[in-house]
Length: 202
Image 1 (tube, rainbow, N blue to C red):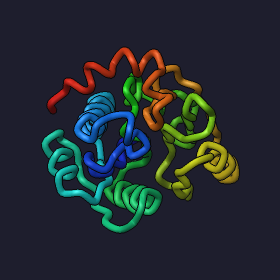
Image 2: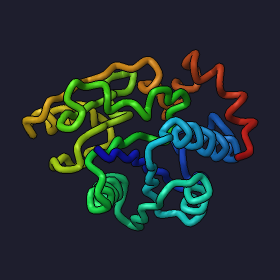
Image 3: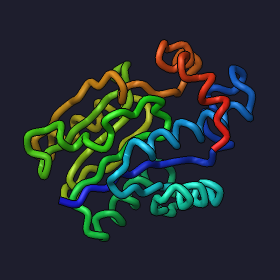
């Protein structure tokens, strides 16, 4: 079974918009770049694809050893669907889609082992609020369009169940933590790592 990880990454300078007024622009960019670096590192040793429409992100991804799934003007969901189609066409049987803003993405590379039937099962990791979808691992052969945005976990769960594939919801203490809002900056795990992230220069 050939497995790939897909990480959608928006332009670092435009990322974390909901943190405007809480972090200076330069710090928001550093934070976005740092978390994306953590996610790509955690995704190894499996092949990694970065869905993006920004030249600087594409250059960063290439330097990190990832393949670039270029998707200008498609929006988040369109870019993910196009990238999954590209990954399937390249011969991969399974794709794990993960957000780039996970500060502690431990175990990401082995997520597809979380179900007893990894070749056919869907694994969904919701955020810690049970609202968003932080990670979704699935076969490339099934039709499961991306439905990211507020409330995406419920939509993805319903769509996954409708496919008839085995579905596992995994509440992971590391993968469920993301950084979207000012409240997330106060999460104990995030607060502990924030100084490291804002000091990063990669």
